[in-house]
Image 1 (cartoon, rainbow over the protein chains, first blue to last red):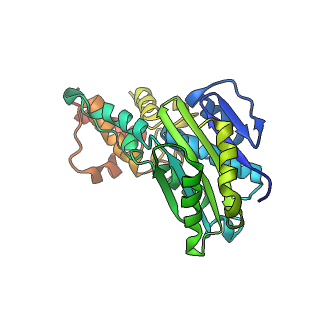
Image 2: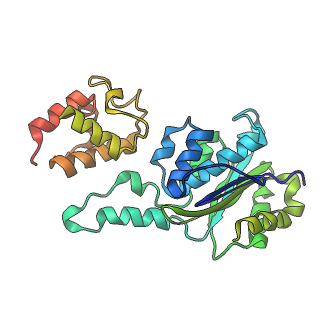
Image 3: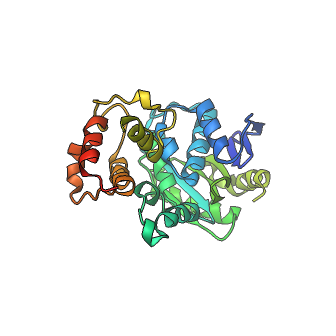
Length: 206
Length: 82
């Protein structure tokens, strides 16, 4: 297992492989601040729900840290999976959508909010951005469990074509409240994966 | 009306960093420029119903109505119920 590259995003904290990223805002405003400072070329970001914004920014920061050029090789497109975990799934987006249909006299279901009422949309946003063609999965779990995550991630390599997985934890309990980590798992990393995940999870306090 | 409509479009479609002056009155809303997609088209249909009481029975009609801000504003003026 090589160097431990990872990204941690919390409502008021952004860390890339141990280095704290400077920012002035928190919550959703921090995500927009990080987007403008480090990404800035994907306007669809502003249409995403919080879960997708967190996953999108975390994945972009990680890929930048890894120095990958988008679509440069098949390992980055055909053979890469996106596998994420979380407890609250799309609950936040579900609540936002529910508000648009709560009042019978003001009943205007929002299509833009509805499309985010599934947790796996965040994996799709990342795959679309990077032209990934591999598996995309979002596991809704009871809690952060490194052994369980390592097991599911190692299973993703069973198909022979998957060479690497953009993996992580994404959880958002309110529009400005979130916790996430992202890391890249390569086929050869599977042996020490649980320990690697535990190290990152200790930094995130999950 | 044109300015108000542009502001509503920017707000409902979350067009961050876009100013009303950035939207050409006669430019197509879809296909270029603003980078709108099919979900945005549905949001514009909801906007017309919510803000102007216009129920678009045939969503395919949106293609004609959303040709430009001018065309959309004209359609709203002629069909609004609130």
